Picture 1 (cartoon, rainbow, N blue to C red):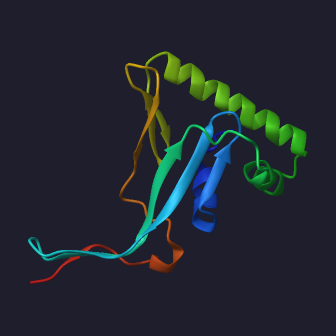
Picture 2 (cartoon, rainbow, N blue to C red):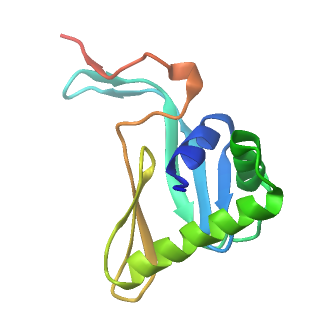
Length: 136
């Protein structure tokens, strides 16, 4: 099982999704933006970041998996632990971990996890259907 879809689904409804023993994805509101040089308007959205210190299980992700698959809570936690082990293995081998629709995780030279969000995906449901546009 991959956690990607579950994380992105939850980021639409919640501002924080914690992956136990790995870290938390935070979605912070960003207002609409106007670039006066290029005459470009961008809709409001949520900017996603990653905090490696948020490791304690709050139950949100596991309960979401329980509801989606009808498995036990313990099985959901084990599935999450397996995915985290895969993520750690990829990161330790120098590879990047893509969390689809969310972003890319990778290690820097000091073995700190860095995160690059995917800017093309907007997790603010109030902005559904709104796109960046250019005005003349």
